[in-house]
Structures are given as C-alpha cells and as structure tokens.
Length: 96
Image 1 (cartoon, rainbow, N blue to C red):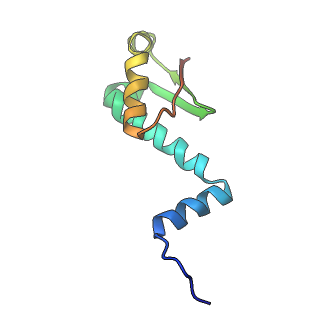
Image 2: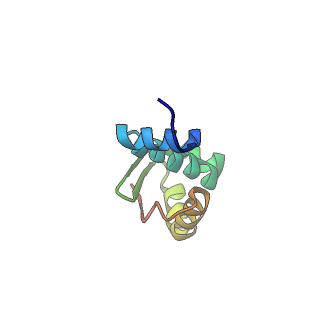
C-alpha cells in the first residue's frame, strides 16, 4: 500500500502523542524546563515540587524570602515561560 501524500515525521509523531494521550506529559515537561530556565539556578534549588494541569502552574518553594521575590515577579515569570513555550500555556501561577 502506497501513501498518496508525503507526511513529515514530526507531524506523525505529534499525532501519535495526541492519540496516546502523551502530549499532556510532554507539555508538562516543557513547562517545567521553561520554569527552570526562567527562574535560574538560585530559585530552581528552592523549588521543592512543581505541578501543572489545566493552565495552572503550582510551585512549592522552601524559602519564604525566595517565595516573596517570586511572588512579586509572578507576572513577568509567567510571560517569560509562555514566551519560551511559544503560546499562552500557563494562565495561572501559584506559589505555595
């Protein structure tokens, strides 16, 4: 059986991820990597847990002073994470 239309491997892979439900896991990992690159090594070390679902990024921070600094910059951090991802993926950013 021959295909009538040529398909790029990247499109086939994206379709496979979507059909198997793995696309949300890949998106979650992309969000976590973007978080790590935006906040830098200093705040990355203070981040105990990260959780992402339905546009909400929830991070548990071990230091109260780090949490305060991140809270004051939460809008900028959210914008930069979305810039890295190329879309408005993170809608709400919560610190615990």
